[in-house]
Image (tube, rainbow, N blue to C red; front, side):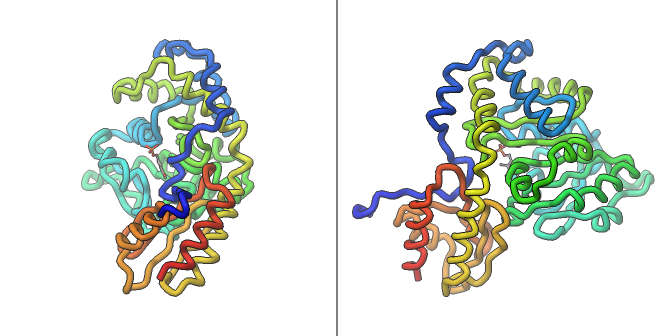
Length: 344
Ligand SMILES: *Cc1c(COP(=O)(O)O)cnc(C)c1O
């Protein structure tokens, strides 16, 4: 431990610290009371994000969980049903919020690394019959966390959009890592604005802001969203200091996401060649999920890596997850590869 003090934190892309430029932007933000809608930096962030996706309006919130939960509440009534993949963050990692906040049930589908298709969804839309909960909302995640950062392209989403319109079902995007998806698909974000009724965009993941997520929607949706946010205790005051970090992130940290993807691929290429790795998901964006052979205990593996300064998480069964982000340098990737090659 002593000969090398390097710490490489691959647990999540949420662990980033604000850069000096971001801190400067935060310190010099002009703020006001956002519950009165008077924080000009919050308003600027909301306008800027809405414009990127060609949506009417936006609401800055403390977390991606909150933007998703507000959207679910807005797009469902109690006793109705949400359709999503079984790996979805909204289902697995939001504390049972769908049941608690919206009193809705969930239909879980088994997609391709978390990605759904119109063919997969259609048979699970309930007929209008008193026995069945009303299917009212489809949620897609892009990129898919548990899919190892798999992403949709627009032509995969378009048929789902048409199906939802035909069946009168809302379509929401958990776009916590939407900019990672866009960096690879090169799709036009305004097409997302056209197809989705709601979009959650995280600023505190790959974009490197300390806190915050933006919910996008129509003016009417955001009007309701603001009321729901208040009831959840998410009405905040001089949030402009955080919004300033978000604006800075949108201006400076989108183009560099490709670097994270390259680093993820580099890690994946080495991992695949190691004897104790039995399988690995394609590293499509900034997430690498691999499986250890049966001889290795994943908790012990994580402890061993940590002893060498490389932090990561287990991800179910024999799985380990690495996430690359803005605080991971080339040197750190090189160091991690050296550590991995010495593991047995
Ligand atoms: C991180 C994440 C969110 C939001 O999480 P918060 O920690 O509440 O900001 C939502 N969806 C996905 C896919 C995520 O990875």
